[in-house]
Length: 144
Image (cartoon, rainbow, N blue to C red; front, side):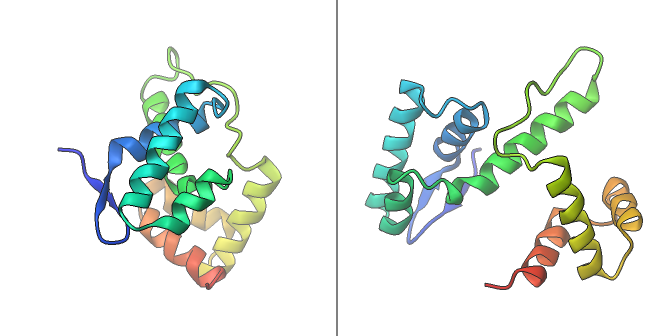
């Protein structure tokens, strides 16, 4: 069964949020279907009482969708990795960081974890550091 993304007081169906995120990941923000889905999502957010999130999306601010876009792209990269000879990720994501940005992020996360960048990458690849641990490191690095 589809899990939901919690918002203020109610749950917005995961598939609605993911649908918009997928369209954005594919760089189809101007496609009429993407615009209709984004409009529907803002309506759901407003009805759920999450008017700030709805207002941000309506104004073109997709910050609330970036974690979902990252999740989708991570899933797609894993799917491609299962059969790299016949599957491809496609063009670079408009939301993905540049190689320089990735290098700086890995260095900052490694510093926050007290590890070398090489050790951090090895632990990520082996599964010793999972997504939750990385998010905790990011929070440590960028407290809100």
